[in-house]
Length: 261
Image: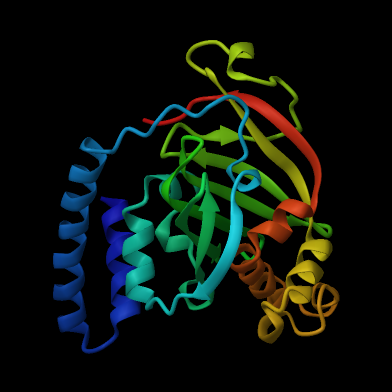
C-alpha cells in the first residue's frame, strides 16, 4: 500500500494540472502499472545462459550514439516496469529532471544491435543508477544494472543486477572465479565486474570523445567546485560513455552469481 501511495505522488508531480484531475489520472495509471508489472513478472522472458566469466562491454564494438529525448513520463514507465531497476532503487527516489538516456549502435558477432543506456541520479545526491539494456543478449546478458556510490573521486558499484536476477551486493572486491566451472548451484554463473572506477578519468575521457561538454564543462574539476554539477556530469558520462567508464576501472573482480529469475 505504501508503494502505491508513493507511486501516486510521483505521477501527480510528473503530470501537473488540477489536483482532482491529477489524482484521478494517477490512480488509474498506478493500477494499470501494477497489473502490467504483475503480468510482466509472471511472463518474464528466459534469457540464454551467460557463458563463463563475461563482461558484455568487452565483446561489442561501438559504432554510433544518439541522445534520446524521453519525457519524464516515458522514463517513469520504463523504470517502474524494469525488474532490474527495482532491485537497485525505487522510482520515488529518482531525480527525474536529470535522467539521461542514450541509444548506442553496437557491432556484436558481425551484427548491428542497439543498447539503451540510462543514467539515473537519485535524490540523496550520493548515488546514481546505471542501466544498460541490449536489443539482443550479448553472451547471455540482456540487461545489466548498477547502483553506484560517488565516493572520494571514485565511482563504487554497491549493487549489481543482471537479467532481472537476484541482487548482488558488493562490500569488497572478490576474485572468486574464472569460469562457470568454478561456481556451484545456486550461484552458478561467473560474473566479471569492476570494483571501482576512476571518476575523473571517465569524465575527461568522455569529454575527449566529444560528449557531455555542455554538462561537464571544464571536465573533472567540476566535481571539486560543484557537487550538484558533478552528479549531473557523472550521469551524462554513464549514459553517453560506457566505454570510458570501462576504461576507468581501477580493479576488476569476479563472483559466482545468480542470473535470471
